[in-house]
Structures are given as structure tokens and as C-alpha cells.
Amino acid sequence: MPTDTKRVRGPEVSQSPSLFSCDPAAVLPSKGPRADGRRRDQVDVRPVFVRCGLVSQAKGSAYLEAGNTKLMCCVYGPRETDRKDETNMKCGRLTTDMRFAPFSCLERGSWIQGSQDKDFSLMLHESLQPAICLHKYPRSQIEVNVMVLENSGSVLAHAVTCASLALADAGIEMYDLVLGCSMRQDGTSYVVDPSYMEENCWNSVSCENQGGLTVAFLPSLNQISGLQSDGEMTEETLTAGVRTCIEGCYKLYPVIQHALTKAVRKAAPSQSES
Amino acid sequence: MSPMKLCVPGDKLCSAEDCIPGTGVYLRHGYIYSSLAGYVLRKNEGEELPVISVVRETETQLLPDVGAIVTCKVTSINPRFAKVHILYVGSTPLKDRFRGTIRKEDVRATEKDKVETYKSFRPGDIVLAKVISLGDVQSNYLLTTAENELGVVVAHSEAGKYQMHNMAIGLEALENSSTVLHRILAPCWTTRWCYLMDYLSTEKHLLGLLLPLEDCDNTCEKHVSVFF
Image (cartoon, rainbow over all chains, first blue to last red; front, side, top):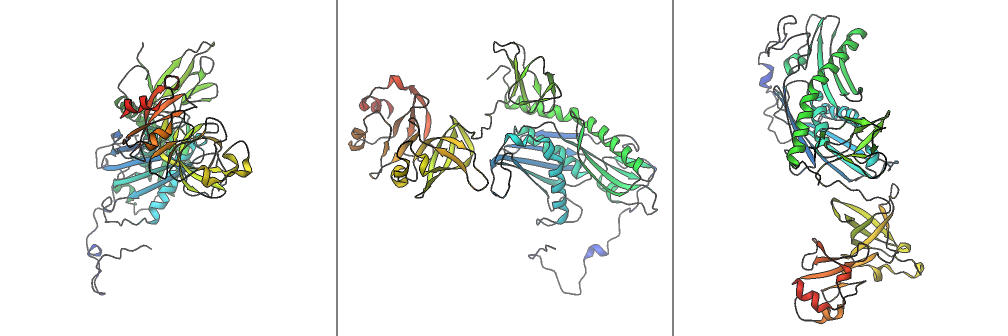
């Protein structure tokens, strides 16, 4: 387990103050309205703010804010591959990296990648790979780096959206944009695009359906490229949940399209052919 | 001209019966979809159907492809091959460097076994080469200079001044003259243009395209006086 060796730990009998702090409301009401005013059992995603092209050094970049969740993504490439251990050089390679800034979560994290970061990176890779035309970039490597600045729920879903925006901004050929949406099932009701509190507070009364679901969706091709779920849910709940997430993705689609066209127009204001 | 339409990856542009797919688009189930975020261009090229493509105004990332003429710089030599960094593909500069290899037998077309690499190349030379293969897992791009128009374009001589191979302009006069030269011409036989090279800096070598080769005659004084 990677530890931070530069911190002074104090005498051996000392204990962390967080053990003694009282827990904030551990159980969220599962019937009442949500904390930020959105409705339950409706596809109510948080309004999203996106901009492309904020990092000048990277080939393409995007910044996304959904409620309090803030993340940014940079794309580099196509570059020459460093490692030559791939047997198939006919198509390119995608490398994804997702990191949480130490100040992003409620408890301070470390800059060293934990297992959760690696997990998310793998899921991001799985969601993005089907969408990129890798056969057009032989012997090359495309790097996608996502940095989460503030984690306020459904980070993986928004990371997928942000990464595909950055890829489109970088001019990398893709079959379609990848949009992500997540939801949280709590007994008989569900919430779409949960915030951090809604995601992590498990109801102590164990109902039948308790779990979360994240879907990465290609809207134009109507295909799902990534599916991640945890908890226990029945089959009908899961399929209904997937459909709900797809609906959430469709709601997000016009905003993403508008942001991309705005970025293209800003890069090349001329209306005539070059 | 009608305003250009913008599109994002995945937008359905038209049916395959209306247009022929160009660059930046892909064909699926009889429809043409966009694969880039950019402007939609429809060009009528005289055939029955117009060609539809999507362009971004930023220069398209060209990767060295088989058969492309590339400009590269020699980084190390070996009795068997020379390693180079590929800097330009055609006339577009690459943002990232790709590595290439010129094998001993690909340096010239005749007398391939008598080639000595240290006599043909030196580290720092600018070479025009052609890609013959993308290479396999272990090797880099394979290049060849075994054609008339290819080979070393700019080289550093022992006296410290640039000298040209394959040049029609008289070099000896340039070498021996005491005037300080800042810019040098280099003709490129492939594209039939004369390049202006920045002599003092080793990185930014291709400053621009100047005049068609037919306009340059063989006297060097005329050109030297024009350009520095």
C-alpha cells in the first residue's frame, strides 16, 4: 500500500483525529426530495458546463463541470509508441490515466496512484477504445490523461464524457462521441447522476435493490461501450437502470455537441474553405 | 458560397448513394458518418458523385505512410544502418519526432554491398528519404535513399560550413569565400523547389520554399547576394 513517507506521523500512541469526528448524516432519506433540488425517479442530470481547448500544450483538452464535480482531460498524440512489445503494429494504442487530485475528495488523498485510480483508468480505457479509429494511426500511441479536481459524485461517467470531448478537440478520428451517465438505485427509487453523498451513503435497512450503475454510451451508433455496476440489483432493475442512463446520455448530447462546434468555430472562424 | 456546416464525430452526413466518402468520414450500413469535429466539405470532382469530407482547420496530423517522401535528420550511424529522426512528411512538419532507419543496402541503388555508411551519412545531416515499410515490432520506420532525388540535402563539412550534396549551384566558391553566410539555398529535386535553409541554427532548417528550380541558374554569386 503506497504510503506518504514525507509526513510526520507523531508518537506511536497517537490516533487520527478523524476517528473522533462525528459522522455527518449517514443515511439519506430515500423518499424525500434530493439535497440539491432535483427529482427522484426522473432522469434529472445536473447541468453541465464544458469547454474545449484550455490546455495549450496538449493536442486536445476539455474541462467539464457538473454540479460540484470538476474534471479536466488532456490528450496527447498520436506519438511514437515507447514500448515495442505489442505484436500488432497495424493499429494505434490508447493509454488512459485517471488521477484524483489530493484535494478532490473529502479526505486528503496522496499523489501516488491508489488502486481505485488504476481501476478507473482501466474502465476509461475500456469505454473509449471502441470509439476511436485506431487503425488509422499505425505504430502510434494516443495518451488520455484525466485529472479530477473535485469529486462530487459520478466521476467515471463525467470522465468518459470529458475524455471523448478532448479526443474530438485533438482531431483524433472517432466513430462517435462517448457519453457517460450514472445512477444509484436505492430500494425502489433511483437517482440519476448522484452526488458524492448520494453515492456513498448506503441505506442501513438493506432493501433488495441497492447499487450503482455507470454506463458509457455511443449515441449515434446506439451502442454501449462501458458498463460498471456495484451492489446488488435484480435483473429488471439493472436493465431499467441501463435504459435510464441511456436517456441521461441523450440529455447530455446537445450540450456536448454545442461545446464542440463552438471550439471548432473558435479555432477557425472563417466560413470559407481554407 | 453557402456557410459551411459544422459536425461532430458520429453525425450522419448523408447516404452513400449521394456522395463518395473522403477524409474524416467513415461508411457504415450505407450511410456516411463524420469521424472528426470540423467543417463539412462537399467537392464536385467531375465524377458523378461529389466527394464529402470533414476538415479541421488545424493541420491534419500526418503520419509517415509507405511511399511518402520524408525529411529526416541523422542521429547515429552504424556500419549496418543509420538511425534518423523523421521531422517532416512531405512539406508538413511533424509535432512529435518519429524514428526511422536507413539500412546499408537501401542507401543507393547500385553497388549496394560497397556502401560505407560513415562515408554516406554523418550525424546531423538532413536527408530526404522515402518510407518503404512501417517496420515490425522491433524496428522503426524503414527508409530508403536509393533514388535520384533522394539523399543528403544538407551536411556539415569539417570546415564547419554547410555544404550541399546533389547541388547544381557551385559550392566551392561558397566554401572558400570569406564572407559569412547566413542562409543557404538547397534545391530539392523531388518537389522542384529551392529551399532557404537557416545556416546558423541547426534545428530550424527549412525556413521556406523560395523559387522554382528552373529559375535558379548555376551561378552562386547571384543567389548569395540575394539572400543574405
